[in-house]
Image (cartoon, rainbow, N blue to C red; front, side, top):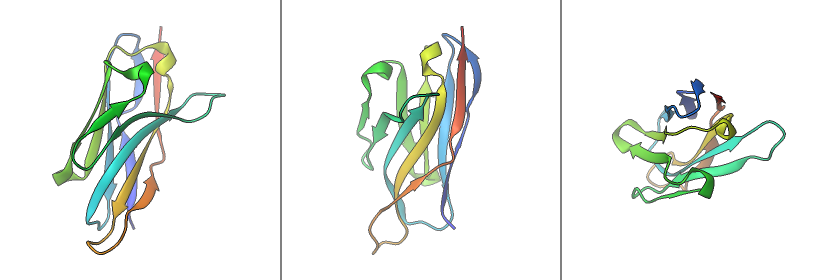
Length: 121
């Protein structure tokens, strides 16, 4: 069974850093595009960062210059390095990946269960 699992969340003070990981488990051929989303209490889920299979990355304006998305294809893992964290970054962070199970199949979207990031003042 293929799954995406986030890890690395926690409690950090404003100005601190955290690195989130999104790892795929199970038998897969390749992860293509991966996105990090977040959802704060009472707010809609928002896209934070995206990375393509070639490594091209884009960021939402609120996190530009502070967050970095990267990937290790050998480990089927995508990372979100978060620096200079702010209280308003507090949210559940989810990864969403397009996964090809075999070389002949199209990519299917998978979601992780989310990891809580809490930034205190």
